Image (cartoon, rainbow over all chains, first blue to last red; front, side, top):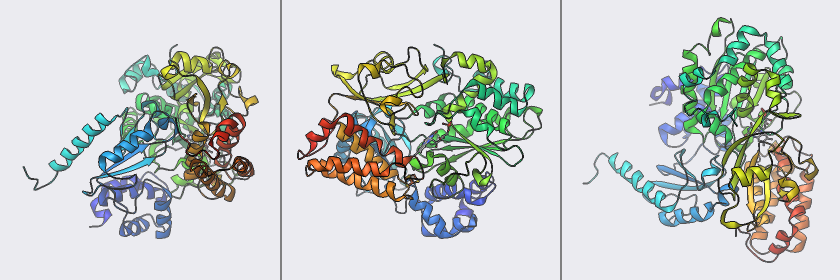
Length: 167
Length: 423
Ligand SMILES: Cc1cc2nc3c(=O)[nH]c(=O)nc-3n(C[C@H](O)[C@H](O)[C@H](O)COP(=O)(O)O)c2cc1C
Ligand code: SF4
């Protein structure tokens, strides 16, 4: 099924916002990412044709912005701010502990495909450091206890969504 | 003090439409539409002396007056990209007092006769964009957005547009490129956005905090606004306080008078944790030169230009506090890595300069730097000055040159010593 078939209403809503179709490239890329988990080559081609532009233009945009992925990430993308204000409040040490707890390095994904960890630049929550985003939802004033609770909750959420999960 | 901007501190539910309306909400828009011609609104904002809160401090009314009258359509872009390290004020405004921003943006749109407002919000503020969409829908229901607003005959739409993780899109012309569906690379000026902005049409771009001031000015008048603050810095400013401080957060204070870094950091912010001494202040995130925390700096009333003698300014007032334990060369490394990561790559001095600087800091961090490297760092940074399309190239000079100038001992200690660290 094409993106347009899957998400016609949302796509049209975004196209209607702008006098020029190309402006809808960014929101359409987000829709593709929601549908496929990352930006596929087919999605870029389809979006290019929807907004009447060249696919190289679309590729250039995907490459320029850090929030579009050309490869699949873990189901839960954990982004830890380690920029200066957070680093002053222990975020680098926190990130190291998170990576140790998950057994991966920054930029890597756990073997079960559930968690990817990234260290990121300032995300605008410096007064509540250490701060992370999981799939762009904020979790603030973190420590290892609250992090472990969060990971447990996400694992349970994931298990509950499996069609044949074992009791 | 009662707040003009962080009004949820006085009226907790100000974000709700009924509460906002019950407390004078949308009166500024009503007044603009019923009592004033668009030009009058521009004049009122110009007389108020309101200056842009996104960093550059340019007078808002003057900017609006540059928009040509006879070219249509016109646009307003709200800069909600908020990506400067240490800045988190626009977020609080949008989360807690969103209607005031929407109202301010609409008043601006009426003043320049724009037909659409685009709120460009950083992608990481995902939920806040959804929140704003709901608030926009509420305002539309009340007749503040759409066709024939409040029976004035003027039509205007308001939309959100999500960025996707690029600091440079906070630069106003990069923002326009991004909104047009392109890579966020700044444009050469002139032409300026006021004459050729979004889709090459006249466009005003203002920061969230700037526009959030506008309803107050329309309701209370320019003189009342000028009574707050000092001289050519009227009104209040939200200071984002972070780093080595007991109570980080947003604090809204009037410009000048008793507003000093000492008051902000030691009274509002509760001082430095663990009984440590303050060492330095970054007054505007990573973008403006560092200030050594001398008594003179701490006791200077804060207005635009107050720190000119130190070669720095308050910018968007993202105040990062560094205590005596902080290795300033380490802090500079973090800031240079930020700029190297965020350079859009168009200009060679910025792209290559930030890259080479980050390499030099890396070398220092690995213990392989020699004394000559400090001069090399300074020289590489100096060569970037004045040679770039946008101000990012200038910003990136500051963390290097100003830290070397004020804290040479931190660099000398790092030479041949290995690892820069927070300590
Ligand atoms: C690299 C760079 C990043 C910027 N980021 C922001 C930002 O995140 N938010 C903002 O309001 N202004 C930012 N600015 C300033 C804008 O270019 C512009 O001056 C501002 O949006 C104008 O609005 P104002 O007059 O209301 O401040 C940035 C400038 C530069 C050079
Ligand atoms: S100065 Fe840097 S960020 Fe600005 S346009 Fe040039 S390369 Fe891009």
